[in-house]
Image 1 (cartoon, helix red, strand yellow):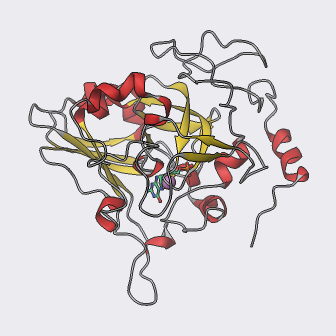
Image 2 (cartoon, protein in one colour; image 1 turned 45 degrees about the horizontal axis):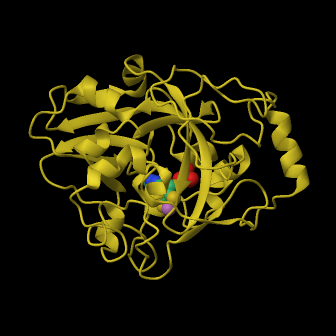
Length: 322
Ligand SMILES: Nc1nc2c(c(=O)[nH]1)N[C@H]1C(S)=C(S)[C@@H](COP(=O)(O)O)O[C@H]1N2
Ligand SMILES: [Mo]
């Protein structure tokens, strides 16, 4: 079944988002203030959002993607490989603050914490980031969440911790995509896992998101807690996290394990290193229901966040370590 992105749907959408001003579709990334104050942006359309925690945009190409497309065009293989299906299938997946996250490995404060426990120690703010999928589409998303570095400060990795590994919940009752296929095969090795170096995890841009558009994360976007690493391809931004493990050695990552020639551990957005099967020089920017739009724009090195992250890769051959 194909979802239609017609006028009616969009009219409905604006009815359920009464704060038209805050949700105004024509907001742009227009300001850089990493160490800003916490809280939501309360600007007016067209106004410079001076008190926001918005991360730099280049030009006015960075129009905010609508809440509708962000929540109806998803990659979440635990549900389906079809981008339109997670929003339907996740309707009954509504985890709450009792969601448990294991903190394990090389860390001084290991344990199983509920999201509620964690949030008591974290400062949640809004961050507007570009999201660039390795498949060459992109969006601009207003996340709510807390800096991953805050969590690290709280749980205290030991001096042996060189990497952080994240894992998604493994439960085929909730995620039908994790069931074996008719030939006993899986789409991916489950649970979905991802990893960062400890320096990457401590970079101020790395976020653990708890919401989008000021609301709790919907299931299809990785409720109730997902990683957002805006300078890397979207597959690094692992959803519905149940384990955070600190390790001495580089952890296995799902896509890297599945297709190592196509998906590297680093997966930094890089217009100069093509995917073996397609170019990464440009991307389709999805803003609203025009959907597979219209707009093809150049892809930026590190997704436009070079100023914040390029130093992490000074001594790395980015062609080899893609
Ligand atoms: N657990 C899990 N996390 C995941 C994925 C997935 O299939 N499973 N897909 C990734 C990919 S490829 C992308 S592009 C983003 C998409 O996030 P979104 O649906 O919120 O836009 O989530 C990433 N995180
Ligand atoms: Mo992706």
